[in-house]
Image (cartoon, rainbow, N blue to C red; front, top):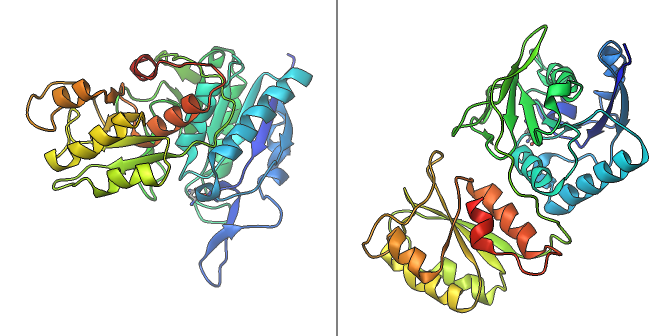
Length: 325
Ligand SMILES: NC(=O)C[C@H](N)C(=O)O
């Protein structure tokens, strides 16, 4: 049987780090320890690897995400690959995965993976996750499923998955709908179809989009300041089904009057925001003011979606329709 060709992109993160046994600090190494294991994939696939940058994931910005998107597209144009795997730090992994899901149009499987324990720690999960990811990327059923996140024997869709635990290796979960598949010793098994959402043609990622969490007793000051600070948009993680404390509403009005889009998500990690409540600050009032309601995304992903939409080469994107889909 012809071996599958997989393009592996290493970007850094704990999966590529080592623990310093003296200080206990986990940090990047000069040479990525994962690369020395390429031969382990011989039975599964032919690997071609690249390392465009080597960053802990809190150092990753939308610029690196765009760089990855361009690298994948240019590579796939030049050479046929059956799948792409990206190794990445877990802290912002869901953001890079979602960015790629929104902007890549290829139906070649793209899998993002990482690790919770660095490469020389007992129970290191990186190599195992990398092998699982290569198996998923090489599997023909993975085609056309968008960008996936593979860790700990589970396959998640990029729009649903989130990091839920600071240290546990089962940290990646899809609270709304669960994983879309599992990986066993012998099989890669998909049991759900991910909802394939709209793609946005990204041009630039230099707009300023803030993410602010609502809380009991929230006032207007921080939201109001966004105007003077030249922000182009804001995502608010609202309360429950999409409500805000009344003292925050005047700032929402000011922002909308200034044509700065205000997108609402919930700080609950399940469900969607809706215009249900008719009290001051309730969803009904916010909707009437022109707040854009998002369809189940978490704050960090809605922020990326707004950032991409505001910097898109597509002339006029209807943000309301975009966030509904
Ligand atoms: N497990 C990890 O990869 C966490 C690390 N701080 C990172 O995101 O780079």
